[in-house]
Length: 232
Picture 1 (cartoon, rainbow, N blue to C red):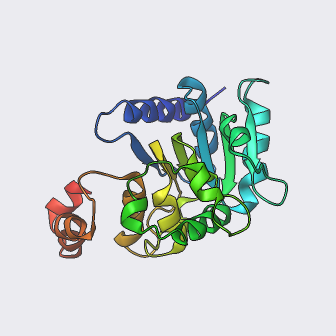
Picture 2 (picture 1 turned 45 degrees about the vertical axis):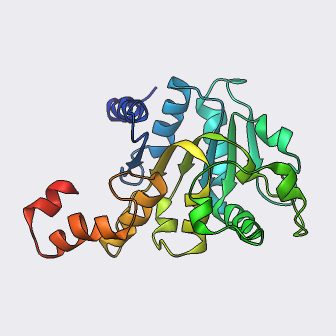
């Protein structure tokens, strides 16, 4: 059973997903508090067609084992999309209720998409791509992650995308997904720009680019102005 603070987190995440303009959030609990269990609680409480979990390679087996340990058998069909044995057809990937993949895999497929001539502006629209188009690209494995209309996208250890100019950050921002979550015990490591990268992934409507972020948060906080902290 979930602890009281974990139940509260599941409730809060559900409330966030019910919001109209922003159905997303940052779960910034400290390490060991239970972000994985809280997320699984959300997935069980509010079952959607599919959820994509992006995590470091070292966390793939952790997520798989936590699902097996804490979720009743046959509740979800779990697919691991990573490595040489990962599914190669879109139908199999679409059949999963929970798909677990890695930042490296997402980045690799994103690089292939850019070879189609897609720009970050086009990718940021968040619509899934036509599978036939991506299969026609002579770049080896088909591009599948960007062809699925994910209901929910979860980034575990989301500090991996703290540099918003990195391939990983750009790749994750481009993933299609209605509900978007960033899990991180350290959403700010070096500067507020670390947090801004997560905000961009969440597609927070108030901060679509650096202009608004700098004007209303970064500069006021740097100048120790209360308005900046209140906005933050």
